[in-house]
Length: 96
Figure (cartoon, rainbow, N blue to C red):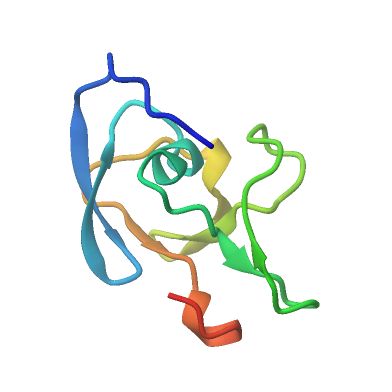
């Protein structure tokens, strides 16, 4: 579905859901997570179903997650070394 641009070779380490994870650098967090196959961004509070980013430009809020302790849109946040990301997948729907 999504392919990582192979010309981007720089990667950085972040903490994703409590686990050290390597992601591509120099892109927004939503794109970086999609590039490594992490499609689910959150669990819908109403339907309890997995959600994933739709617009990737800050309109839909489907990529809202906890980034460095603050609820933010992953598509509007540039990935940085050591960033702590919590998608809270286990709290609502039991996914991880």
